[in-house]
Image 1 (cartoon, rainbow, N blue to C red):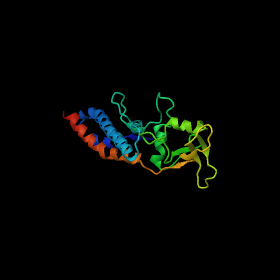
Image 2 (image 1 turned 180 degrees about the vertical axis):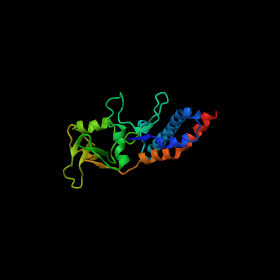
Image 3 (image 1 turned 90 degrees about the vertical axis):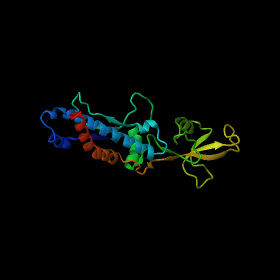
Image 4 (image 1 turned 60 degrees about the vertical axis):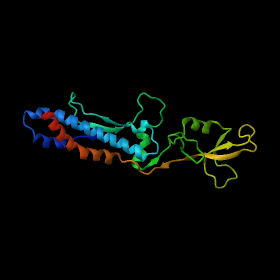
Amino acid sequence: MTVKINIQSNIKEVERKLSRIEKKFLPEIIVDSVNETGVRATNAMRTQIAKNLDRPLASTIKSVMFFPAKLSRREFNGLVFIKNSWGKAANKGRTPAEFLKPLLEGTKKQPRKEYVITPTANTKLNKFGNITAGNRAKYFNDNEKYFIGKPKGFPSATFGVWERYGRQSKGDTSGYRIRKVANLVKSQQFRKQLDFFKTVGGVVRNTINKSLDKNMKRILYK
């Protein structure tokens, strides 16, 4: 998901204000203005993620990035985007763009494997409100303590991961009790909580012309 900061439509207006000699500074004015605007737009989107999501990871907040315009390469466009990879890091699971997509679009989250796993009141969560990878592995691999499905004798029970606990919950399981520690569903519907294009586009519209005027005065009359 990206937003390109392209101000070609603003350049003619700026050029009309400049003399022939002053126009040689136009590339510097444009690059500085694009980059100033891009940083503000990026920070605005990061702030929205921090405020609207429940205990987001720092890596999720910082996944909103800005690729700046570069005067040395005569590249006058900037790019605000959400990372779609973890770079050199391995086994990180869903990329930020994949994770945030349902929250940006208000769509369904589809499972990477067979099910989407969601917590219950009995689920142990980390400080960020997530089920850890270690606990996920236990749910599906520790068949003595956990089982998947609907327990017999409980007509109102729903499908998910159930934990055996209490007296002799492992080995000889007589006398144990059970509790549901995770829901397993085919998909999970999310409401739209973030608006990338409105946030970034709004900052660009409200900032770029002011930045052009400010940098034109700063560079031409310093």
